[in-house]
Length: 145
Image (cartoon, rainbow, N blue to C red):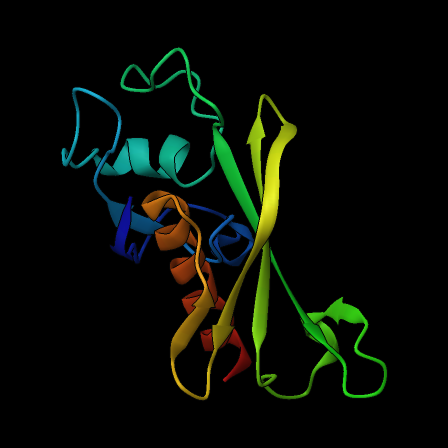
């Protein structure tokens, strides 16, 4: 569960990480709830997904990585386009998420945020995925500003 940005990580390209930068936080795996993994584990496993070599990860799990992308309607045709096509932050930010297991999608959907009101219009039911969406969005908005 990401809690705060992890500055000074050893990734060659931190902006390419799944949440847009490195994060420090606590584990949500059964038996390790609220434990803080050491930095080397955060860097090599937690921030990348697919942490199958992590001794804390449950053997049976629905997914082992979550990926996000930003989409929003264009003003001209309301067709979803890449967020990189906007010169400014759109009035509504839609995040598409894909939960993956062994590099294959097992769940997908959207969450939606209104930056004008700083309010989530559509949230994910799983608090972990929602928190990751919030972290991803924070990284995205920082890059856009």
